[in-house]
Amino acid sequence: MVVNKKQAGFTLIEMMVVVVVIALLGAMIGPTLFKKVQQAEQTRVAQDIRVIEGALKFYRLDNYRYPTSSQGLEALITNPGGQDNWGGPYLEKAPVDPWGQPYNYENPGRRGKEVDIYTLGVDNQAGGEGSNADWGNWNIK
Image (cartoon, rainbow, N blue to C red; front, side, top):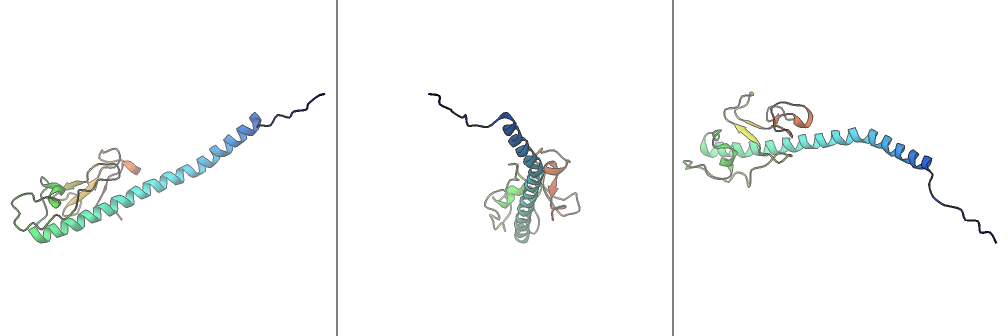
């Protein structure tokens, strides 16, 4: 008595076709996905900077000036000393950029604003493009 057993499974050709299809889909979707990630980072930076700008305006209303560069954004959280009219905290905590770095602050501003609030991007270096670009209150939308 002969038992006829068929082997079930995929051939090498079928497996290669599936891998090629997945690779093509990844090649089409990948750039779009990375563009959305960069867009989300820029949106978060813009929102954080607007919040900081609002807190700085309240600080200025109370103290008649912005914090100095040496006082930094920490002056929005704790009284830097010598500020009798300090009505803070103006922020609960210092926000960090999407890459975990604290935002930079300069007074006076060097890019056309009274003060500069900015991040240096993922590489934490001046200049760059994409996620490495510098984003500040002078170029956010």
